[in-house]
Amino acid sequence: MAKLLLYLTLATSLIPLFSVAFSPENPTDRRVLVLVDDFAIKSSHSLYFGSLTSRGFQLEFKLADDPNIGLQRYGQYLYDALVLFCPSVERFGGSIDVASIVDFVDSGHDLIVAADSNASDLIREVATECGVDFDEDPAAMVIDHINYAVSNFDGDHTLIASDDFIKADAPVLFQGIGHSLNPANSLVLKVLSASSSAYSANPKSKLSNPPSLTGSAISLVSVVQARNNARILITGSLSMFSNRFFRSGVQKAGSSIKHEKSGNEQFLTEISKWVFHERGHLKAVNVRHHKVGESDEPAIYRINDDLEYSVEIYEWSGTSWEPYVSDDVQVQFYMMSPYVLKTLSTDQKGHYSAEFKVPDVYGVFQFKVEYQRLGYTSLSLSKQIPVRPYRHNEYERFLPAAYPYYGSAFSMMAGFFIFTIVHLYSK
Amino acid sequence: MARSTGKDAQALFHSLRSAYAATPTTLKIIDLYVGFAVFTALIQVVYMAIVGSFPFNSFLSGVLSCVGTAVLAVCLRIQVNKDNKEFKHQMIFIPQIAGPTTRASFCRLCSLQFGAAFGDHEFPWINLDPAST
Figure: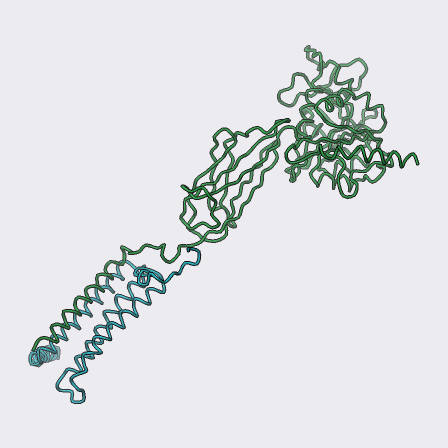
């Protein structure tokens, strides 16, 4: 009875939330489900969650084996993004399992997976579905005897200070397991990789044979952007998000620079912005094409016509759409292979256009814009347009190559006329 | 042997020339007309051999009209010749007018179908374009 009441209140309170949901006009995620192992994480990682809520996300915390959790109800997704901060969960509760998480991502929603040194097989399976493989040894952690961070309470060099990436004020602290990426996978990207002196092994036991994951093949933080522009963040350290790491200072072993604050907060804030579609999200609107000199869109072109193609591309800045400025957007005039490939020129306000001549081939063509750049959503526009050959009266009226034949016809006419006169009126 | 054939050819040629000189002027005029038509056709064939057969329709219409004129003129010559007994005089010339006219129209109709040089402006009231008004 109480549960029913709970459901009712939950359902009625969720209804107004549906209107503030993820939509094409506002691509940032709004409702985020956070699955945790126990609610202590809510307080020990409160700085990270606070930064999310201050940017307008609505977080909902649930235990990972809560039997009431579900990602969708009656065919509609209840959340726009999922955060798995539950590295030791053996079975998800409710209606969530690996297949439903994969469906969630396949329908365009975002995901953050954080594993840790006691990661369960379930979390590893979720990560493998997303394209990264955690180290198979369950007790292994990433150890780096050269790039470790000096700290009071850790003596086994598993706390790594990594600064292998651009524009961070301070190194990022990491303590957990590493993963590797399949080099043939073109959708996965290493964001933070371990230095070349790192390896993945059990810190408590002696190494009997060389570790399988070494060096910069170990990735500490990776992202995946799927072909439907869903974004996934996978990392092997849940403590990277914790308040303790956010607040602590960093001093790399062997260097005398002591940073007051680690770069974790800055790094994770920016990465979360990217994962939740606050930055790096493009949209292309207003695809138009017309003959040069006219303004309306014809239904069919003729070969050797001059036409102009234009499109507007905007980038989401977190709060509004800003014009996207770039000089490498290209349009193809495509029929089985691109007959024309032209770089669009921009007016710096998000309007891109190009002029070209229709090739001397007739058929059904497509205007294709395929734009895939690192860190941005992929644009894939295509508009079909037929191209016809010349009509009968669009050919040249008199062909210069045929002047002798015209001359012969006229001369025969003249000759015939003269001949009839001569023949009839001479004696 | 060669000298006798050479002399025979010369004798043959002389006899032909003298026999031809005896034909009536009317027939000579017709012969001249036939020669003119064939010569025009020949010029067009040589031109096509040089530049290639690109407006093939134009080539066909030009050559065929010349050759057809030549053929019809030869028919006229046969009928006009007084040595042929079997033809009446009066109605000979009418085919000579109708023939080239039909043939020229036919040639232009053939070029019309391919839509090339002399193309559709022959019959501008026929609208072949389904998309225009």
